[in-house]
Length: 53
Ligand SMILES: [Zn+2]
Image (cartoon, rainbow, N blue to C red; front, side, top):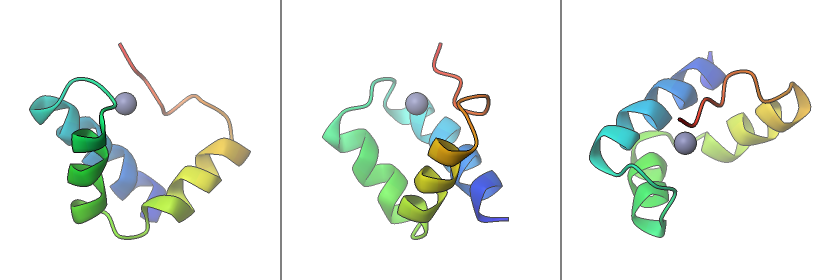
């Protein structure tokens, strides 16, 4: 499921870059092509999965 993939990539990208910098989003974008779709889904379905510590 694309959202799961996105969340995993997102969390893994945080291992490389802890903040939501342009560099961070570049990492996510290269690893998860359907990122925009996943972000839209998460926006619709709440923030539960987006755990930024
Ligand atoms: Zn994050």
